[in-house]
Image (cartoon, rainbow, N blue to C red; front, side, top):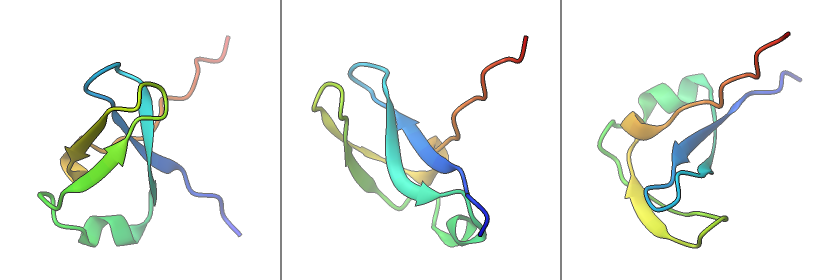
Amino acid sequence: METRELLYVTCRSCSSQVPTGLPLSGAVYEIPLDQPYQLTCRACGATATYTKAQFHILAAPAKG
């Protein structure tokens, strides 16, 4: 089974990366861009609403 990367948003309060609980998959492309998702940051506890337009994957660390 292939492991899919999780999608994240950046917390508006503390700039931490907040997991959306959604994997990067074909199903994500069917979600409307403006569908709201309410997420709570694990780092600061702030709750905010985000849309798919704000989702991203985490950047891989540079190999050195």
